[in-house]
Length: 99
Image 1 (cartoon, rainbow, N blue to C red):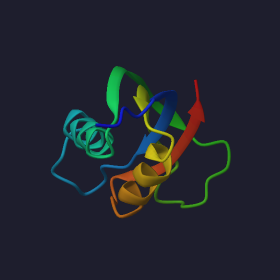
Image 2: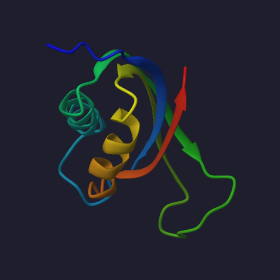
Image 3: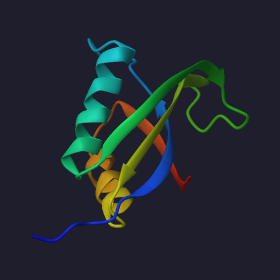
């Protein structure tokens, strides 16, 4: 039985629920499930609220809800998480950093 050392990370997600039935809380729950799916453990979630973008790339989306999630995962966890979330249309952007 191998024990994988987990590292701490902080992720900032920009969420886009335009035209979706899901609430922000439901989207966050989905993101937490994705973190668990890559063998991660969520330690805290902080909703930072809706903010306008400094540079608007889509005029239909001038701002969105920002959420910060602190979690621990194996070294390959962040890459696996980004790949899973790339397919999720409600997660507009993902920023990952070591904590």
